[in-house]
Image (cartoon, rainbow, N blue to C red; front, side, top):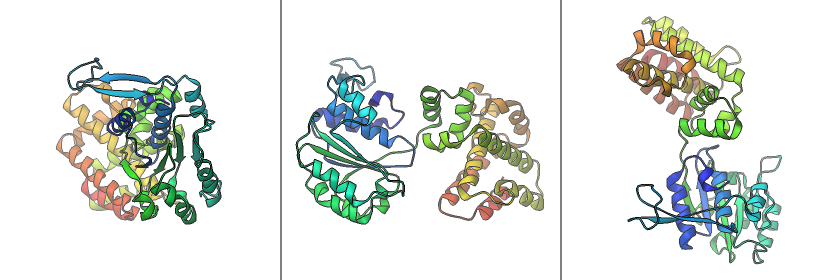
Length: 349
């Protein structure tokens, strides 16, 4: 997939394309960021842009006009997406783009690494440069990481290593120190929605609802079935409706149980998904309360019920509630107990 078809990460992609144009692409790269945000696709796009048989090269002005020769313009490069090289990379069969991925036991062992390194001793067969792309690099076994060290420190001629990971801290320090690290952020809800509707033919309303719960991750959005989405949103809506209408401490603690769920209780991640749904509804409450364009609602099908909620949770209270949910999500991310977080949040709203 060419750079132009990727969602988000414009600063990182800009850095990479400039390096390709100038011939300064580092031979060892570490793509680090949340899971499911497109790091692997960016790695493939780099390999495609370098090895494309008919690359698209254009000057892009600082104002984004793309006018050739404009003041402050810079040259960008992208793969054509249609040549033989691009097609083979997209299908995963290009002889000079080697992918290492975890096996059925979720590990990358030393033998596949050795095989790839052996092939790197030869010049590229049909591409301009050979690429070794390592997906979920945190799954590399220690022996496999050690086998990579010499190649990362002194990469073979015409070879680029790109390690892709969501937990860089698991990698050996000696591996991390030999790579230029590029950090990827989460995608916006609009970017996730766009990918879901464009690439997966998901209806816009369902795509927006899934994106609101995905925390910037396309894979997480895709993992949500329609039934899961309906249940999560129903729970979040019930929690907000009941918590807003009560000032009684005991009742608030009872409402907190909605977040935790009946036995078996929800996992920490499942509670976080419900909270993200509640957060998207609180954002919609502010849109409705402010009289803004209702087309930006993340939950347009809930407009009537959310409008009723604004009577008790509009304005400052909705903003404070949104901030409280944000703090609750941070606490869950730091392994705080779900019950403690749910009860704390119920008392804050």
